[in-house]
Image (tube, rainbow, N blue to C red; front, side):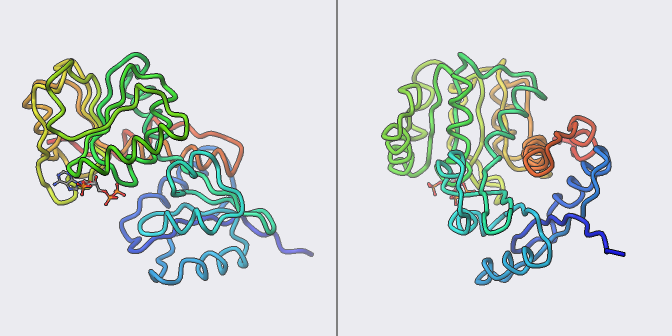
Length: 281
Ligand code: ATR
């Protein structure tokens, strides 16, 4: 009799105790009838490669990768997708023999959440993306694919925003992609959709965001989740923005993309997003 082996997946990060990925992927597996295991692995900061190698050797089929290993995940892979290459980081790996594919589903999860769950069209709209770090880098191409009228990247350190935009222009991004500082906002047309991709919400710092830049009918979206009404969302609310959202939908949607990539079946997300949502108060 041969022993049956169950396909194994995991999220690797440091620290990892807070991760919702195991609960999300186990819920997806149950809902789609897929037999798999999904664990959380806390890797020492200097041992990412050894941790992944060990997981692969034990039958691992794929991993999600989170802070601080997203850059290393890209370097580890043999085959890097255009999305992961543009982001310079991967949040999912898939193993097949000696090959290792890297993907980045964060931006795609963001777009799906805004468009499909929150019902906001991106095409033809004016979109403001705050921050010029890794989270912004991963969001630019998926947002541009929706053909917004304008995608403006604003950052506290202005040179980082302009350099990032120049890099994407050099790789063929359209002129609807622009970049600058917070001082450049509020002088022209307002933005319909404002996305906070800075780390300011983690430290509860307000952003130098002029209310005159925000459209009252618009959507304010904070990529962090579970922090209630962040200073950014409060600022948007005070400016009259009617629709406020945190990043729980983005988290679930990027997980659904990874699950579909690994398993060939895309799970439904709406119920799980509702269950994991926390009040924005
Ligand atoms: P991540 O990978 O999560 O994007 P990061 O690369 O460290 O993190 O980038 C953090 C981003 O948040 C940066 O754009 C940073 O602005 P600077 O480039 O000027 O440092 C932005 N950020 C963090 N705290 C902020 C604050 N209090 N006000 C404005 N921007 C802030």
